[in-house]
Amino acid sequence: MAEGSRAYAGAVASVPEHLEHLRIEQVVAGGDGLARDPSGRVVFVPGVLPGERVDVRFVSAKRDFARGEIVRVVEPSPDRVAAPCDARARGCGGCDWQHVAPASQLALKADVVREALRRTARLPEAQVDTGGSVSSWGYRTSMRVAVDRHGAVALRRPRTNEPVALEHCLVAHPALDELVHSARFVGADEVSLRVSATTGERSAWWTRAHPGDEVMVSGLPDDVATGSDAVVHERVAGRELRVSGESFFQSGLEAAELLVRTVADVAGAALIGAAEVVDAYGGVGLFSTTLVPDTAHVTLVEGSAAACDDARHNLRAARSRHEVVRSSVERWRPDRADLVIADPSRQGLGPEAARALAATEAPVLVLVGCDPVAYARDAGLLAACGYRLVHSVAIDLFPQSHHVEVVGRFERDG
Image: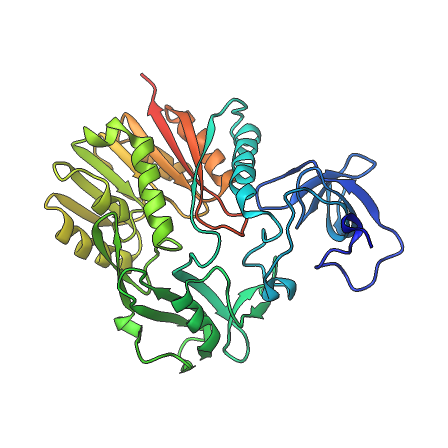
């Protein structure tokens, strides 16, 4: 069989009688390809690349759009590669872009951001630069995972809650992959596994599937800290950070350092000259400890109690002038600031948080987004509050997946 006609690795077992032959126009937010059937209806297809011609079987159809799955790649993109992961072949949804050549992933992700800004924020001329990327494999020092019925570490099948057990994970740091392979958490719902690339410390923290039930843990090496002791220390841009198991941290040390550098570049002179800085959704204090000049006063706003505890510890060691406020950004009462850095969750800011940040009247606001559509929606909300998007930088903190991080500079009109 010719290379371009070989069956797709994730295809259905038997080829249905009727297939739709489609050309993929582009990749959109969420990672799927967009095509159109003969009637012009939009069809979303996972596992494809722009320009490819594929045979597709519809799995759902509505009047305005349909979803399909590949049966055969007829004309593959030059950027297509064979996915190397066994778990991916078994349906794991953790790394849904393993079919994309690593060198091509960031540019494709930047195109997705541009399309989201064009369609959602109505900014067709928005400037989106490509920044850096972390290593293609072995980069994750932190993973939040599910478990299967045997307690094995798992990730979920796309668009379902069904766990797919992992023997190994190719994007995990070797010291983290050992835990993926050996650990069992019977009775747990989700587990956070973490390793420090700086110290080698490892931790495991979990939530129960049913309140009150005991979680039976086995296969954890003796050095892995658990429960209230599930703490590691990482050194980012010369600053030591304490990270508890319940607190959020970036996917790895490389990701944290790349994000810090990008935020610093985007903030530019506004960071150097700031006297009052707001670090919204500040987590354990990544930006407050590594970026903000020691002469400035920082207000870190964070809703997680565990992250606030970590932030207080980290900021006490890093700077003298700071305040950690445990609050949602929506309920926080802002004061005037010279610079705002905001790194919300995947859902983005939303209207109330956008208004709260705008109430600081900061001349410059740096927004970190981890979902292109939410980021574009927030760009529109900030525009309504008087903040103009100047430019954005797309960086790749999650190679092999469709996820993209965006750092944007917004300037206050007038």
